[in-house]
Image (tube, rainbow, N blue to C red; front, side, top):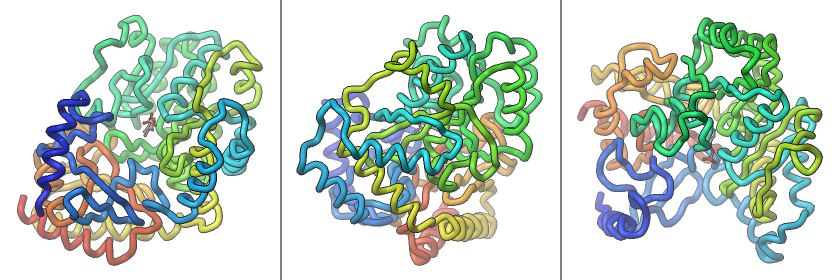
Amino acid sequence: MERKRSAELYQEALRLMPGGVNSPVRAFKAVGGHPVFFERGLGARLFDVDGNEYVDYVCSWGALIAGHAHPHVIRSIQERAAAGTSFGAPVPGELRLAGLILEAFPRMGLVRLVSSGTEATMTAVRLARGFTGRERIVKFDGCYHGHSDSLLVEAGSGAATLGLPGSAGVPVEIAARTISIPFNEPAAVREAFRRFGPEIACLIVEPVAANMGLVSPIPGFLEEAVAAARAAGALIIFDEVITGFRLAFGGVQAILGLEPDLTCLGKIIGGGMPVGAVGGRREIMEWLAPRGPVYQAGTLSGNPVAVAAGAAALEILQRERPYPGLEEKGEALAAGLAREARQAGVPVHINRAGSMLTVFFTPVEVRDYRTARAADPERYARFFHGMLSQGIYLPPSQFESWFLSTTHGWTDVENTIRAAHRAFREL
Ligand SMILES: *Cc1c(COP(=O)(O)O)cnc(C)c1O
């Protein structure tokens, strides 16, 4: 498979942008080689600038649950864009998206639309600090909540891929207010709240962690964490930027019956356009400007084209309720991959939740950031390239989740398992 044009474009990109990319994980640093430049997507398919075709398991990092260029989404974007792209003033489409979100999350009293997941989590943390009058926050090692100062401590996603425990440029005074503890360890949560309880504004968590690779909560972990935070008077923030409309219409909180005070959304709710959201209990949300003293704003927040795309995506999910089908395909894919790895004698541990999964190249169970990091990144890199050369586009890092869309067919799943048969054997 030739990728000559991609290689040329990457050389040119290196002259124009830091590392040649506008978001770090795209740079292929963890797997080697150069990024693939894409021209077109359709359903579960991607087409690169050299004319190669791939089955896509990145799906814009989970955003495209209905696949690339879904006709309902594209029509909504085109119709809206033709009537003007931004006014910096309210448009009816904002109500449509906000209404769909509140319908999906019945415990959310109010929602504010922003332009990224990072803005959503940053706003949620500021709101929690403003509302409680406290400054410390608790997060979990390997969870990623965007790239704001307070949250780039032991963060997952690109920070995990590059092995960065923090970021240069974050003042130590700010990082010191963030307590990061191991995921899936109730004792660590109890200890954090025992020591710092009255100073803690909030606990923020990905209820199913997807940015250290996929790691589900062990039974009772979230319930204990929520109880400890509540007992200390801290707010509970569920970062459902990935999971919000991925595992259920209403997120992990709907599945587990948990009641966070604030919820952050992103990715899927933009339908492939930049949209994020923070929502929660009315009395907390009313602390946001212009009602309250916690400031937050955005020139392009609630952008008409972006909210049209997002509402169209949520309408598809509301209408089709694709979750059982996604679960079935996810299960079959994980089972097929596990079988192929076993037969090839390659020790892997596959974590899956619904249509998200990660193949960790490690013989031990992965249940937190420490065990995730024990997985072999070089083996993953070779596997990644083995799959890429057979037209399967996987996340270019061990510490990310694969995503299925509603447009992945059974043939795609079978072809992927067949490709894995070869890729595992060639390791
Ligand atoms: C992607 C992600 C974010 C950040 O969203 P951006 O739109 O990339 O800023 C925050 N939290 C989680 C759980 C994410 O997966």
